[in-house]
Image 1 (cartoon, rainbow, N blue to C red):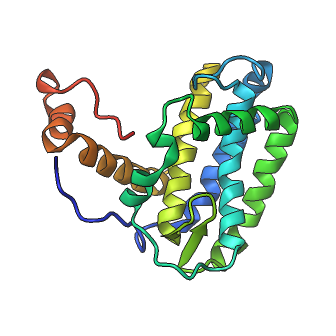
Image 2: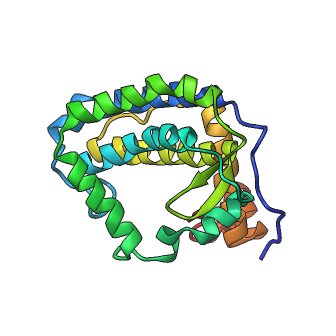
Image 3: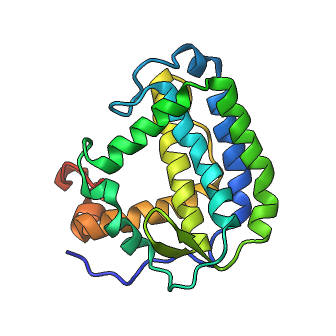
Length: 220
């Protein structure tokens, strides 16, 4: 397995990328196709379209909530360590962490599409001031750890990009075209995690020599 140094994207992120990314998220959640299939099964097993839409909306909400909290007094961990510890990655789909995500989405989905769109736009409107006032590190109360603020923001951008694709695929509409400032750090994160998980040969061959590529280089 490839040995890599701890991953941090602190200082490389354009924090302004959050605002247009959330605009695209809100516009996707507002699409009539999403509302028409709100109670249907989504592309994420065990989640309805409505639950998945709310899971997307939770991402900018979480940014505002976490950045507004007091700065932690513990050392931040790296991004690779963050994902190495993630309960949802250590468990299968029926594990408590993943069941909890689905149950929360299902409960939120009862509020409907209009409420989801409004919540996304409310979070978007709070982002500029929240980002400007952010401390260098943030605490994650659900893990008891801390991340550098930029690293935390990249985790939310990744969730937005990946689950926007899931939601678009669920209702057969185009995936939002995210800006390079959004995609760049997300792809850096996913590539790094894939390399740690599968090694150099698997990643390079998949990108350049498909005839020798393994079946998957999934980051998770």
